Structures are given as C-alpha cells and as structure tokens.
Image (cartoon, rainbow, N blue to C red):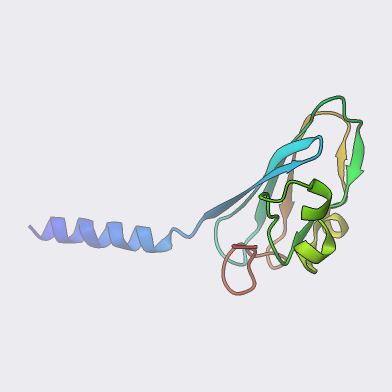
Length: 131
C-alpha cells in the first residue's frame, strides 16, 4: 500500500502546481460582436490574449481602442451608448490600446497577442479577475 500513498502525494503535488487561468470577456455593442480571452499559466507570467471579432449588419471596418475598466458593462441596460459611458464603466485601469495598439478590424478577424510577464496579472489583488 505504500505505492498508493506515494501516488496520492504525487497527484496532490502536481495539482498544487497548476495555476493556469483563462478569462473570457464577451462583447456585444452596436454592430460589433465577439470575445476576448486572456490566459496566464501563473501569476507574473506572460498573458496570452486572443481577440475574435465579428462586424455585423454591414458595419464598416475601423480601429478600436480597448481598455480594462473599473466596472463591467451592465448589459441589462438597453441603450448601448449609455451602458458604455465613462460614468458607468469607471476609470481606465489598463489601456491595452497603448500597450498593444488599437484593434484593427478590416473584416471579421481573430488576433492574438502575448503580453510580457509583469505588465498584467489575471488573478491576485492587482489582477483583472472580476473587472
């Protein structure tokens, strides 16, 4: 039976090392739909960002600023312009447009970025979880 105890301890040690997290942020504003996914293997490590965007109903291509704000979007509000106002979203915590550039939407597209470790955490007190 000692091998069972060893196997259990090895499994527990392996589980303790797993710290990866993924955050999905759905988007739906006007004629823009999509999702942004942030993933990080460990706090302080690189953050992988995958942006999938879809322009609908004949929307024209454009450049879009993107930020992490103090408060989440309240999709219960019907007026899209009001739900994304500065007053409702609060202050900008991280301006991803300055760090990674504006999102350029020539058409429906998928873009991936890597944010170097130390600039952005997904968890802990300085993380974006829950924003």
